[in-house]
Image (cartoon, rainbow, N blue to C red; front, side, top):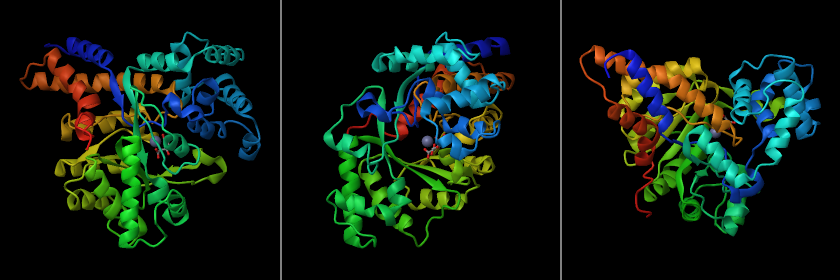
Amino acid sequence: MENSGSIRQTVEQELENIRFIDIHTHLFKPSLGALGLWGVDELLTYHYLEAELFRSCDLKPEQYWDLSKPQRAQAIWKTLFVENTPVSESARGVVAVLNAFGLPTEGKEALAEARKFFAEQKLEEHIGRVFELAGISEAVMTNDPLDPNEAPLWEAGTSEHPLFHAVLRLDRILEGWSENWRHVEAKGYKVEACLSGKVLAEVRRFLSDWCVRMRPVYMAVSLPDTFQFPEESTRSHLLSNAVLPVCHEFRIPLSLMIGVRRQVNPAIRLAGDGVGKADLRSLENLCRNFPNNRFLVSLLSRENQHEFCVLARKFRNLMPFGCWWFLNNPSIVEEITRERIEMLGMSFIPQHSDARVLEQVIYKWRNTRRTLAPILANTYSLLVEDGRTVTREQVRADITRLFRKNFENFACINCPIP
Ligand code: FIX
Ligand code: ZN
């Protein structure tokens, strides 16, 4: 390929042909039942859209929360899709999903028609169709061993599903030990609020038992912008003496998602979280002090991204991934992805969907392909200008590395189970 036109066409074709692994979602395999959200009412009551609703109507949050789910969806459809033009990233996403299924995307009647369509779908085959439309082969879940609705399903034994991988989510342990240690104790582990050597050994046993039960591809935690390591804290002790040793034993990475300011506005619930710039010295200390652990990391603040790339150049056990949450907008995805390629080559994971509702993967991955095509094409055009030829095989290998192999290798997906 010599000219930019043929390069762009080849990049678009290879992006279209390759099935990606979605490495962080809030989707659930069918055997986890009602935890899995799908259909138009769930799409419309996505917390991203709830935040936008309150900016465009007189409904007060407390009035909104008193409504039923269908009534909330109706309020959002009326406000953001009928009375206003759905131009935000999240609102346009709903339009793209309805359009992908050949459903009407505007007017008062469109919601009723969409509801009828989704009510007719059988979940198992619907999942397959949605993943095909999204161009993904698998989705990685978020699974909480202390969630009162989810844990019993795993403890009773759930069936594996070829399209879903599990993740052991640690927020209630690492961020809420003082109020949650009793739930760990209730499951038969001799733990208490204070972290003695014996208690830490029991926490390791709890984590190991859940790794055997869930077979997670990584452990994960979402951390505030104020996260510090090391520090004299329960979280720091649990990380050093329980979580990281068990991750190492099971050869899985620890995913750190850093920078959330939880409940900036509690009145709007899940939509009320904000963002703050993190101190990356803490991440640097973790990567340096635990060279045999692997850290799969996403940072929420745009202001952290350049320093993040520099840090990733220093530590091969640090894998940057995704343009997370408030960063998952084309204008910012472009900036972040270009600086990652310029500093890290193809040794990072560009995106995840963070989908909470099944059909969101359709628009989130279409947007990723649409945003990345010119970035990758420009990358190869510069290389041609500077004296290298670029082949379709190289483009295919690079995209496969970005959206599959970097994760498979880093998470040791194909390693023998310890
Ligand atoms: O901690 C997380 O996994 C975040 O992604 C969520 O808490 C957040 O609500 C979200 O869905 C962002 O996209
Ligand atoms: Zn998430």
